[in-house]
View 1 (spheres, rainbow, N blue to C red):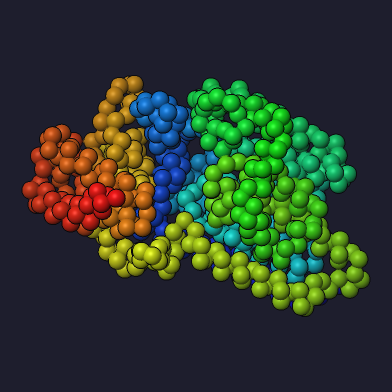
View 2: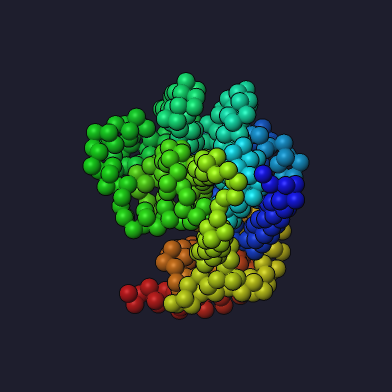
Length: 549
């Protein structure tokens, strides 16, 4: 048995790593936000919290712009649109009192980093149910070093950041036989979002196959499956038709016939055509293998031979691999985080079995510890070089050929010239903005992504935004390497010129490629001159390039 000195050293290492994780992730995330690299989803969640704080629960004009009514049917965004039709996320209300004390998009960033950091500490306590302190600490350090944890943490706020904490706490409650807490946490997991039941189903599947608590496992599987089916087929359609007409079709439309499908129809499509399902799971083959290696790497590949890892994490993996789209195989976005708890818990049980078989419990061996540490460092290296969510844009070039790199001092200079323009937009005014400005304007009733300008207000009347602010400097900087930015620039520049020439909007300010327009006012001549000079610079570079193709 280990003495108190070894235990203290393990705890010291854990807390040092946890504090480093929290501090570094928070620092980079705040830098990402304040230099205007946080994007659309950060604005969505902030607007949802802001509206909920004012009694308009889960409403968002930004979410409305992504609804099937707007995307597929050409209708206008609505300020009273309920996001629960897209993603059913009642668990967010847990954090509403904190947001009410500090109503800002920054609060959500701090909350996300805090929840993930806390999950690693709970993981240590969970590991201690089976393992000695040094090995328990290594499991937690592996969690903090995982690409699938760091990447989604260095991102816009997302609901899945709650999953690791809730699942680790659920498993700890199971180990302690705190069944009241266990069922509370099971409900909270389901409340995270409509597909979180897949993770909970994996836990129930493990409890059945391991024969630890088969009756509870059967109840968990029944509850999670019934909840997901009832929620997506009966409850969410009350708010909108997005789940069947857009989200299910975008991810699982290959299993359906027609232009919409329910979850039951998608499941039947998988069952009735198993070869198509198998093909999706293993396609692309090398992409799938790369994804699995990335998930296993920080735990030194132990989950590959840990039965519990496959039982619990297998269902989230099946959900990801059976879906279509490039994002499902990206280890740095939020979906990857749903796989992590099962992998960690399976590794704990595997090591626990080995410790019980060795009398002195000195596991792992020195050689394997060195290999494990190397795996964690390699995971950190891959995380950094992948530049998740452009967090390290000022350290890692966004493109090498052609060269696209924005130094930190240059971005901060740009921000210093953009902020005075933002301050001219009243807090209660409706506004339209380019993607990376949206989070900073999202604490209001009506905000849209330009060139969208029209929306339905609370009186159900059509209205145009009062202010427009567009960051063309950024689009121009990135358009040389990224087609999407070039297309936006080609669409936005003529639209600004059209609004100015019609006299409907006046150009009231211009600074460093950022245009501020206000509805129904006379343009500022100096601002117009600045806009025309900048437009002349980018027209030759962008529009001539497009015409040459």
